[in-house]
Length: 159
Image 1 (tube, helix red, strand yellow):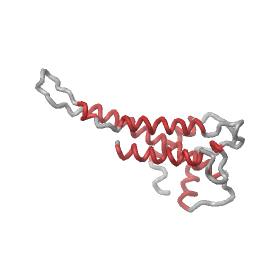
Image 2 (cartoon, rainbow, N blue to C red):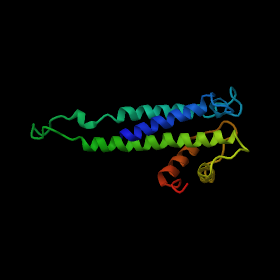
Image 3 (tube, rainbow, N blue to C red):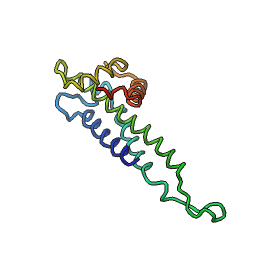
Image 4 (cartoon, helix red, strand yellow):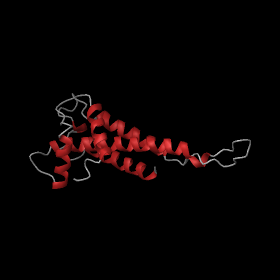
């Protein structure tokens, strides 16, 4: 859980960098018309919230053991609770990375016709086969869910 929490935190910070309007040639929130469109602002909010949730979920469940069974079991591993928390951390981290992936792909669109490296272009082609670029405000949940499922399926492993 700790490693995935760190990964999600790093990923969210990169998403912040491309959506904050401070990177050269990138408009705030990756909106085509900032101030009129919200672009990926809410997606970055979601990434920040999920990364923060992971920080609380990463706390070891075993630190909260309580005696059970009339003190016959004086130490309880809390293994089931740990597994449930880890499942949520995995989902959250995959969603945060999916948000970064979709935002990074959108940021690349602002730099066209320039090309990225082979690996980036290969990953972008795989993503764009199922997740199209945004051309104005839209509901992003479908794109983000698709990107998350693509990540979890391992489809980018060959890139």
